[in-house]
Image 1 (cartoon, each protein chain N blue to C red):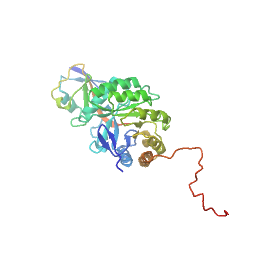
Image 2: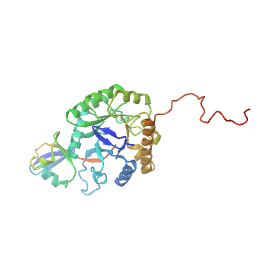
Image 3: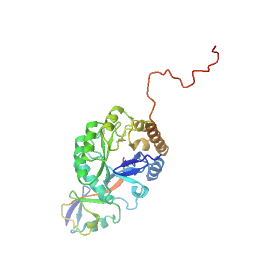
Length: 262
Length: 67
């Protein structure tokens, strides 16, 4: 079935986006990425280690930008200014690549987004030519404002970053989806494959995760499970589920032809 | 002698050298890096033409694993 995810005019066949952090080594990162089928992968931008061995392994060798769509993030930024600076460095680092993940955090305990700083950064970045996929709360009004600013995807949390708590408020996700027309991608909170499936069954356009795969006992197997969870949830959404009702007077087997009837 | 800051750490230089010369001294030539000088991006194409000055604050970054 041809059912592409379209972000900023570009088609992707995978609706699973994954992070590249927290893996044991780059080999495991690459194996998990391959098992997930993800095409879009997030990366962080950090100061280079000044004393580093120039030949030490590099993420870009294990995960070549020629084979994946890089999504540089602003993880760890607590102000709009820091986020904008980080993504300008990312664009220079990645030869003008403009598709980015904006996240501006509110506090280091919860990693909950600071939507005021996020909105300020989004305005600056969109005006500067970036294609902004934005991590935000599941507030539908903020989501609509971010779309109006020009963000190319709205990425609400399902629960807190790294918590693995799953989809805590499906109703708010539905409110977000009703209000915005750009893709809605659940970013943060997924813990296992059923969480990813639930997000997709709700009608989300994709799911972005890192810890759920990297912190699994077997990350590569979990990456494969997530791929299947996202695909199953998407298919169920497109198929259209039966309505829920407390009980049914319509059994699945025929009511006629029962033995012993006179 | 001039003093610059690279990623928050002070570094003394005998004289004002170019960004490209600094990158070479740090064994970063050809590496996938991006550089910011006093808050502004320094395009790779201008590494040779920009000369460092006393008090410059540089940020040199790379891509790392992240979510």
